[in-house]
Image (cartoon, rainbow over all chains, first blue to last red; front, side):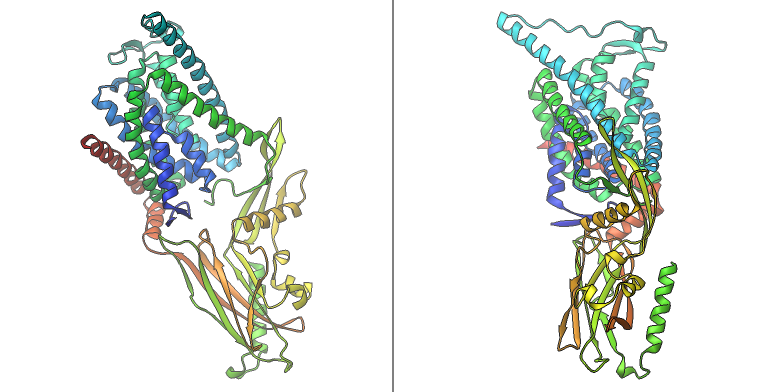
Length: 311
Length: 253
């Protein structure tokens, strides 16, 4: 069954889009990431103009994050105070990001910047996560064999980050740190989220674990919580500035996505944190590798037309 | 615009030369539909063009050529080049006067119907399109940009990849099916029908064809452009509502 997308100005198969939404939604619920880093490249691959893919994906992530966060909320796994500070930074960041997106589109280099961002950040994040999760998996197994439990991971090391002003107590995260660090992380991830058409969870989650030292249990819920607001801001700005949010496409994607996210969250509750992280790391590295190969190998067609739409 | 005007003048001239009596009009053509409506279920459509020609020279000779042009659109082409290992957009070419859609049908191969100069004058055939190309590229010829535009447009299905066949019935009646793919750009198209005898255009007719979004899709598009802020807020509200509904539904289930 074909349906015409009014903003993307193309015709797509309804079931392909629903399936895409469901599959990516499942991962979103499983790992607590928006799933945008998979969805945006897939949409572009289907022929959706990159600008529309980025704008629409922001809108869809609002839905999958709302759906996902409620499950974590019930279990008390959302640090609202931390979430609000990340959101404050994220608002500024995503606004800057949308302007940056527009500027790069005018220069004709937006595709390259999107690809470079993906390769660099997916590569770093995926690599770090894989190494860390494999190490802790091995440690758990060793202790299990010895009949003891793994030692409690040290929550965080003290570094220059902890000498910053505006210290705050984050009860849920069991932290007493400066508000400047999460605000800056929110800002930085917000910029990337707007440019890459993602929620930024795949950067936010490791940043919360490794930079802020938050406990893994609250990381996913809090990340989803702040993603709602950052992607809502990006949706609004992309709608008003670039007219690149396709509501019909977003509704189809989120229809599959919200259901997939629920199932994913249920699966995620059964898996161990280390297992989840190593699985996510492999997927992240896979996408990174694919994009890297595309950037380096000789393209079949050297010319591209109208990079960045017609407005 | 200059060429469009020249074409109109040529058409007027052609029409004024034709015999005064209405019954003796050498070329009559019409479309099965003057509106291509892009509705929610739109997946491309065919429009039938049909007509009749008069036996002008008494020998039954005479060829019909149909050209469909979408509204002109400025296009930007970018060329990738390898730079420190990765492929980067390096050269740009801006093309004006390229039709957003271009499709040709004829009773015989174009080169047998008319000499180059006639095809050039009326811009019949991809090689005869008059494109204004401004290239900023130190390494690549503008001609390569022209070829690339045609190649990319053909890949999108917006430029015909060959001259389609027009079926003739008893050397008087003709018909052809024009195909418009799902990604057809909106606007007012010109369907030009030429009657050529001995390599000269003896008659021509231009029929407009409107390609327009109709129904919910059109309303969404208009709303998104005219009430962008409200559209954005509604998009966010819809997404939040859908997410919440799903979470509630799954809690019970």
